[in-house]
Amino acid sequence: MQKVKVIGAGLAGSETAYYLANNGVSVMLYDVKPNKFTPAHSNINFAELVCSNSLKSNDVYGNAAGLLKQELRILGSLIMESASLSKVPAGNALAVNREAFAEYITDKLKNHPNIEIISEEVTDIDFDEYTVIATGPLTVGTLNDKIKEITDTNLHFFDASAPIVMADSIDMENAFVGDRYDKGDGDHINCPMSKEQYLEFIEQLLKADRAKLHDFENKEIFEGCMPIEIMASRGTDTLRFGPLKPVGLTDPKTGRWAYACLQLRREDVDGKMYNLVGFQTNLTFPEQKRVFSIIPALKNAEFVRYGVMHRNTFINSPEVLNPDYSLKKYPKTFFAGQITGVEGYVESAMSGLLAGIHILRKLKGLEYLPLPEVTVMGALTKYITTKNQDFQPMNANFGILPPLDRVIRDKAERKKQMAERSLEKITAYKKEI
Image 1: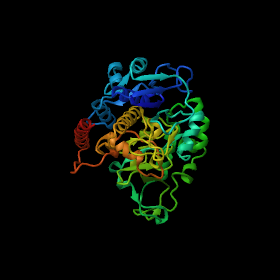
Image 2: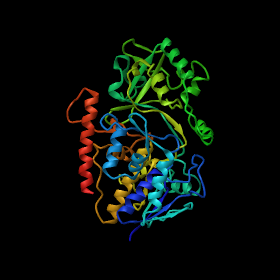
Image 3: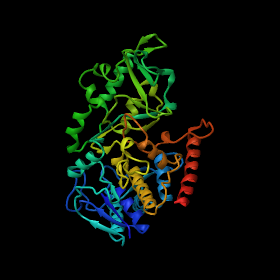
Image 4: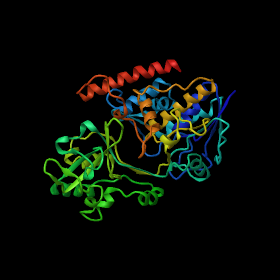
């Protein structure tokens, strides 16, 4: 029987191990539990949910997170199976009993005849054996150093991401296209503010609720990247000399520079999504929506990703990772989970399942079979493996999916048809594998 070594029994590693084991592969699943815990973990079971018991929306046809979950169900996800059995009432979201969720997955893994659980810390990697590194965003110690070495130091130690909005939700009546001093190719959308609008924005920004950081995150993150709310607290005009600097941005409507101006930078090649430049923040998600919508051009903005600031070790996947989640330099070494740059519980599980699918095909001598890009799974895989000079983790959203072959102006109907297209393709993909 062929063997695969899986390092880490979080959501991604659990998914990889279970898929391979169910398909006749002998799996050695390594995890430091119960002998050791990271600063964020406390449950002796595998697949522990740390920050929240919510797996986000269950709306298959109106929310990309819900669509991703359905794609995973179609492909036989262990994580989705456990979530279904341990769910608790949460409206249109999928929330679970954390203890029951982790216990079910742990039981499945420990009692599988093709899985050997090894409770010890891995410190080295054998490139001649099939290995999946799924150690999560808190990877530390010797293995962390080894990952840094094999990825040519393309390793990030915290996640400080600015929000991203859909291009078609930006109010262009209150924005204009152009680069500072007209130097560039017009890749930015500029969002001017008057003095009154700026002062209101600052006032609400300083009042807004912030997400709680773990003690072990505080020092590292704030030294690495200053949140805009902290900058704003240092003086009313601080942001006007930082991320809201209007210098060199002439508004064609007035022929002048605005009092303050936010720049939006293209996030993808097609220009469907835009990043709020310099807006790294630790505000809660609802507060980001409320406060950033004060900026006139963003009054109706649809956020596809909110800003986050937390400890999150992730590799620069576009530089080092193949679309099958293997390293370009070491084709038998795979990565899975948030360490690849996918953001979120379900997205992490997705990468683990895909790593398992691709490894199994390699073991059988079959060619790599890419996911259709019209699926959330395929689009996310493309995102994390496509060249990006400012690569940051990404979660499931409709913005990364290719557009339909026809224009549909109604957003709800457009999302529905994109979801139907995705489910059709993922069902066909399942038959192929």
